[in-house]
Length: 173
Image (cartoon, rainbow, N blue to C red):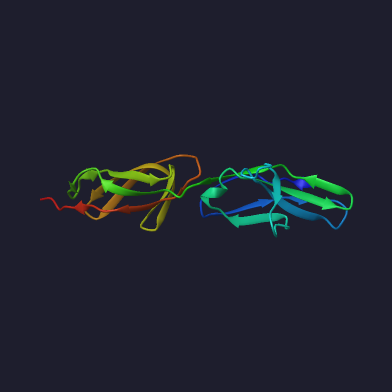
């Protein structure tokens, strides 16, 4: 019988994902992971080649979004099938940052505007090596030698943001 069921996962494209299960019974116990193939004419569960360990791990891509997985345990007494789980894969967001104004002067508060070209928020934002998770929006202020940042965050999981930015920081009198 199955004593540990796999759990559905939500990840970003290019991330590693793992599904785990466990069972007890007469040895030897054999496990085979299966994938529900939606584009198969029979819409059938299909064995995943080489997936015969209690943990199924792989690197995701966007084509994995919505796929379902389950484990089939078997021995001389029969088989037990785990709950089916769903994999949700979000695309890695991309976009660019621009200032809200054409030029910004020392000591002046300014906004950076993020324009998404791929994906949706919330995002993970890295500034000077410091990571801010689940960012929905950001406001920055320049004061002589410091960049101040206030972030609005959300509780949802986020993907790493690949953004490019460019602006001119003018020096006022």
